[in-house]
Amino acid sequence: MKEQKICMLGAFAVGKTSLVRRFVEGMFSEEYLTTIGVKIDQKQVSCPRGELLMILWDVAGEDRFHTITDTYLRGSAAYLLVADGGRPQTIEQALQIDQRAQKLLGGVPRLLLLNKADLREEWPSDDGVALARAAELGMLVLPSSAKTGVGVEEAFVQLADQLL
Image 1: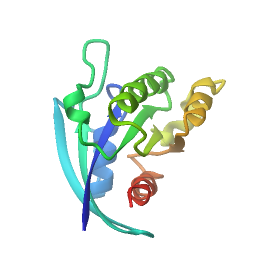
Image 2: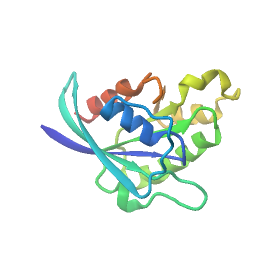
Image 3: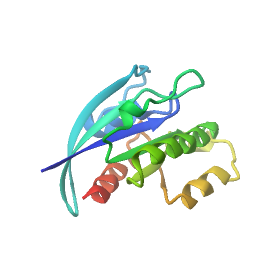
Image 4: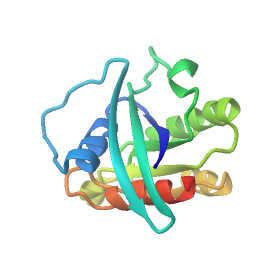
């Protein structure tokens, strides 16, 4: 079975750890835990093209004091960018992270998840400029909710299928 390293990237507190926990363990917790450095999990995924063991690197979120180091990204076969749909600035941060990751990794598969879709009615109205830019960059943008599980399994399976 093929194994691939996948990084979870995005701003601070967008739900990267919660998404991984929902995907790997099928659980969600309201308790917030800050990731320091990187946390590594794995899960075997079955998709139309075969089986893949995803080695998930949950990288600490970016903020104005901390940026993701190239060391964490090296060797990644793909990555999931995560933004909080209620905080449009996190979409911009995800696009900035994408630029750096693409420079280092080249054209590896990637998706942009708009997390916290369970709170969609509270999201600010947005003209969609950042999302349009993501689409122009060839990124699939999907809604997700670690809390309800909406879109989580589908996003990881879609990424796994691209890797096979």
